[in-house]
Amino acid sequence: MAGKTYNVGVIGYGMSAKVFHIPLIQVTPAFKLHSIVQRTPKPTDDASKDHPSAKIYHSATEMFADPSIDIIVITTTPDTHFSFTKAALEAGKHALVEKPFVPTSAEAQQLVDISKKTGKLICVYQNRRWDTDFLTVRKLLADDTLGRIVEFETHFDRYKPVRPENWKGNLSMDQAGGVIYDLGTHLIDQAYVLFGMPKNVTAVFSNQRNDGETEPDSITVLLGYDAGRPLVTAKAGVMCVGTEQLRYWVRGAKGSFKKFHLDVQEDQLKAGLKPGDKGFGIESEASSGTLVVLDGDKPKSSVFKNVEPKTYATLYDGFAKAIEGGGESAVPVKATDARDVLKIIEAARESAKTGKSVTL
Image (tube, rainbow, N blue to C red; front, side, top):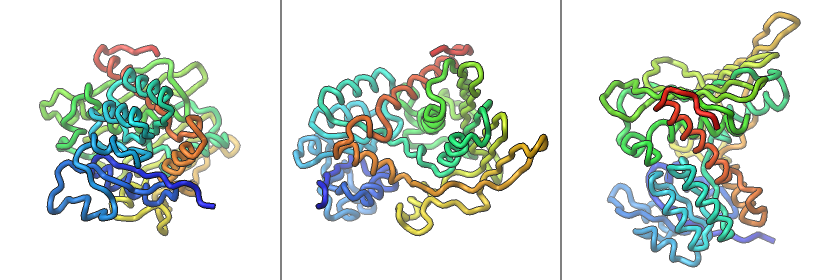
C-alpha cells in the first residue's frame, strides 16, 4: 500500500528553487509540488507556465494560510529565512530551508525551540554533505586508510574577479551575506560532520578583488581541536587562476589524499539532469583524486575513484522519512547542526575582526 503523499510549497522562484529544490521534489516519491510563491512573474520567467499543475501564490502569507500544504521549502535570500521559517512552523508546516540557515546562531536556537513546541520539523539544505567526493573522503576516514588525520584542507577557490550582484555580493555578513555564509557554510559544515565542534577558531578575511568594498570576498578559517586531532583549514578565494582548483587535501599518519575539481551535481542540475538519470553524480575518471600510502617506508601513489554517488536526492528522501515517522532524529541536516556551524562562523568573524583566536 502506497504511503501518504505530502504537499510541498516552495517560497521563491530563483535559481535555488529552479535548479535544486523543484527537481529534487519531483524525484522524491512521497512529495508533490503543490504550490510556488513568485511575487513578480515575467514573460520569460513565469512559474505558472513552467509548472502549470502547481498553484501560484504572490505572497508567502497566502501559502502559510493554505491548510493543504504539509511542507514549505524556503529558497529566498537568507535575511528572510528566520521570519519565513518561524511563520511556516507556527502555521503547522514542516520547513526545509536553503543554506545559510539564518543570520545568527541565536535565531537558529529560537527556531529549534519553536520546532519542538509545534512538533514540526526543520531540515537545512546542506546539500554538499552528499557531494560524491566528500562521501569518498568520509569512506577513507571510516576505513582508516589514511590513519590518524593530522591536517584536513577543504577549498572553494575560484577565479571570480567581479563581485556577484545577487545576495552573495549585496547582503552584509550581518544579513548572512558574503563568502563566509555562502561557501564558508559548506566548508565548515563538512568539517563539522567529520570532526565535530572545534576548540578554537582563527580566521583571516580579505578582499582579494581589491574593489574598495568593505565586505570580504575571501576567507581562510583554521579550526583547532584537541591534541592528537587534526588542524582543519577551510579556504575560499576568488582570484585563483588555474586549470585545476584544489578541493581537498587530507593528510594522515599512514597516507594522504588530494582531490581537485568540484562535484558535478550542480552543473548537471543546471543542465536539466536529475538524480536517477544516467551518469548523474558521476565524475570522469580523469577528475579522480590521488591516494598516497606507505608501501614499507616509501610513499606509493595511485588513482582513487569516487565512491558510488548517493546524490542530493538523499537529503530529500531522508527528510521525507523523518516526516513519515522517523522524527527529529531522522532529519538528515538538523537545525541544531546548522546552529553549531553558525557558532563557528560567528567565532571566525570575531577572530578576523580582532586578529585573535576565539575559543568555543
